[in-house]
Length: 117
Image 1 (cartoon, one colour):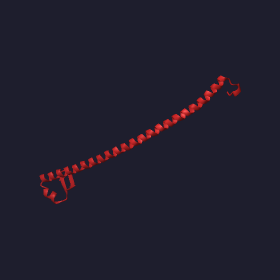
Image 2 (cartoon, rainbow, N blue to C red):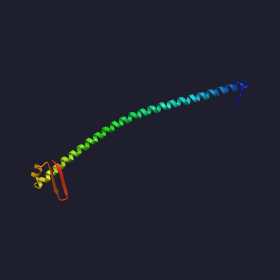
Image 3 (spheres, helix red, strand yellow):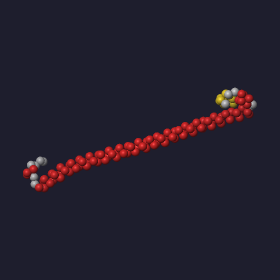
Image 4 (cartoon, rainbow, N blue to C red):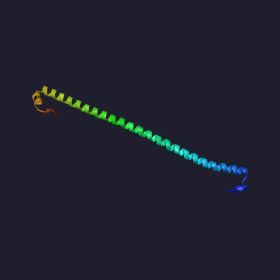
């Protein structure tokens, strides 16, 4: 309901002034809250980016260490395998064959060992 300004009472004039200013202030307040919310979101996103890069660095280091450990394990297994093969060859009189050739094959019933020295 719109009243002519001349016909408004003092109470009505004060009420409309407060109401109009309240609408403006609520709009400005909500706008301010929106900016604060966006600022906090951006800050959290930046923190998560930092955490993600740290996590990736840690994960890459971990992956490198696991790969190194896997290589060490395979080298150890290879050396153990050759020790077992040489031991088997010595027990069965095949030491000359193992020492003379670079590669060797030993048949042990169902198990066939093939390797390089």
